[in-house]
Image 1 (tube, rainbow, N blue to C red):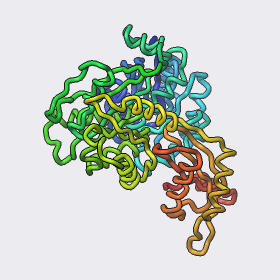
Image 2 (cartoon, rainbow, N blue to C red):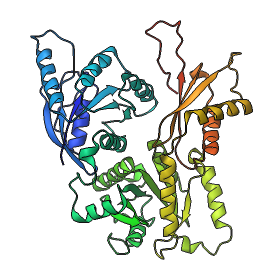
Image 3 (cartoon, helix red, strand yellow):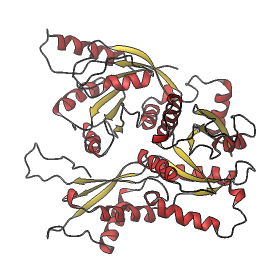
Image 4 (cartoon, helix red, strand yellow):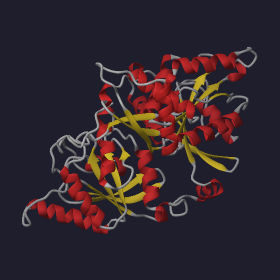
Length: 464
């Protein structure tokens, strides 16, 4: 069953860029100058297994009734009226402006489901505005980068939540085989298998399927496209994406390989769990660490698969040594699941599937605010924040802003002065206290509002 989405917001927040991203081609003009889009433009959009009509609209502006801007606004209001849901877009780097608040009221009065989209959220500069968007009253903002394709997995989940009747598995146009698999285990868990060339990704997936579905061989670089296949294990459906091997950027010179690597990076961005497959005989190469760091920065659940384990199984203490090396080389995901497998013999596949399920559960984990604040009191008592320039830093309270990955907002004084080492202490303590091994954890520092500050500067969150 199809549905219609309207992208609305003030000028130059990236509406046309998101429109082009969803329709899959450069259809709408994009420029840094505001006001390029005037008429509303409709196209067929796709996001995962969802298909819909997406409508790009002119930027909303207050204007005189007979002006061109007013006629553009009328076009936007018509698009809102015809839509099943609204994607209300703000610019994370600029923060929430008075114009955003005024036109959020227009979206609210429409009575349609509204998904708040915080665009340009890549990097630290976009973090502040994304959290400011909570104040618009539409619930949890979806932080994306329409230009770079980041955050599309979260947008997919938000659409499923906003329009449950038309985005259920039965409502999506699947073929018979996909529909049967979906009914057997619910919505598939999206898994991307990534790694260096010739690490055994296709061989491993073939072993999971029990057939030679994917082309394999001793030559590196056989896989070019990101191929999706469904695997059912103990009643749960997994959608595995086999990807091209990712080499160092300096070695990627051919256009076809560049496209293949781009496809692999897209698979990471749209996955829920990423299996980083390493060659157990040559683990933790520089490129392995780069790919793992990319997965952590993208905020995906990570499982480390040590392939070709049949070549090391006879060595005593090999598993413990690899676990210690993983904590040393990847401290940002300390405790991540390390699964010894062999795509050639099939050994360890059940452990791998269980590891994916466990990582997915931790990635979705939520902690009560009461429990978090009891933890905060104990953490401060065990290791108080250091005084900076003779002034004490006060940590007031903490709450979980979102899951997938677990993200926490800590309200405090002088957020800019808290040392990085103390932030790492807090993140590691959260990981230990609430049993979150291996998953990326986000800690956002927000300064508590000072009622004596002028209104213009109140409520701004410094970047961390």
